Image (cartoon, rainbow, N blue to C red):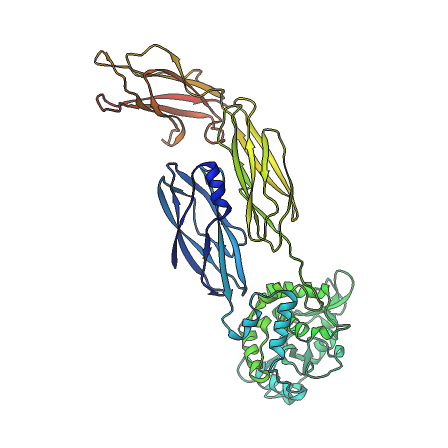
Length: 570
């Protein structure tokens, strides 16, 4: 694992904006596909505020974390680990997202890693897609390829390639029926023949196609005849009971077309054979065998019926004779980077949108005050992402600015301002972001408190320190807490301020709200306490305690501490 120190710049709102436009990148060295790789880095908090990381995630999932929510103490750092694992031999880009409480935006880093296949002969497929990838596969599977001839190919298939059990056992791929046969002559004498997964009638039984072992399989004569040259697909209605053997069946698909469905064990093998054949031989165009409906079904079969030890062994055995391998057996995931095996299709680059967070909770504000939040908009696509508009559902949330366009692999911000217009009110709204990818909805929540905070209500300087009972009590939604700070010591006035904290706790002793946390002069004070405090979450009904603590700055008197009970009703 590699360590990289990343300093999260978290200062004022304006400084944070500038810092997050060009964030740090977490870059791996080149790794091997399908292996887990880890990288550690420090997330540092240079502020004097606690940062609560509530959620850590990525967009694509190729980078991932195993983290629970955590805190970063003021002027401290936390070591985190990000993992990477992908089957594709491409360069991956992602966004590493730390959603938090305490800041007005999520913390976003870039993730970057190049994965490569372990086999050097697949290096020409690196970072390729669609037609370029098909060309690379076609070049590999034809360069140095040995055409065996139909008889020789069948001899190898029955004698060695498709024998996975002892005693020279040969198995029909469609029915599972087994016979003992030393060679092709013995197998054919017991009703076996050779299946061309890509029907040979489409290429007039010509070489090199007719003898290419990657689409030849041993079958009984009857299921081979049942299959004929029909497309492979899911059978919805069986039309021949005699062909319904061993899990394979002949019938019609959802559109009424006659199709053949192989047994589950052979579905993925069929898919990977046809992917190979269609790409290598360009679907024997014009008028080839593959089409969209069949290919879509084969993609599902490739996913659900993965390669097993026998299929991988068969790939190696065939390569010993033909001198090339089937790339779709070694790497079934390659098909995901090919838009079509049978026609020329290059996917159009598009922008893809994601956001952080999808739910924004503002700090509690007094009516008339404002607070802004930066919603991160990430483009994980391959072209610019254009935001046409961002509209708030209620006037208390206002869109201040929008970043557009956002380049591929980059992110920008939508700045939304919260301005409550009434006291003791919860505002729930949405932000609808229309863009060139798909419309997304961001949930917005803000809470307003009373019109004022703490107030010194008297010019009288008290002679004793005291915490009064809140009024009203019980209450909902707001009560007033009064306390006074003595201005005398040993009968004489003192001029120093005292550090005062006033906090609310639940019955478990957990802090619910901090109402006062500052130095105050001697005097009599009142402060409202609302059920809507606590960063936008409404405090539930029940019994709570509020505690006043006062420290004389010079330590000449004892610390003061007093606790009273308050009750919130429904």
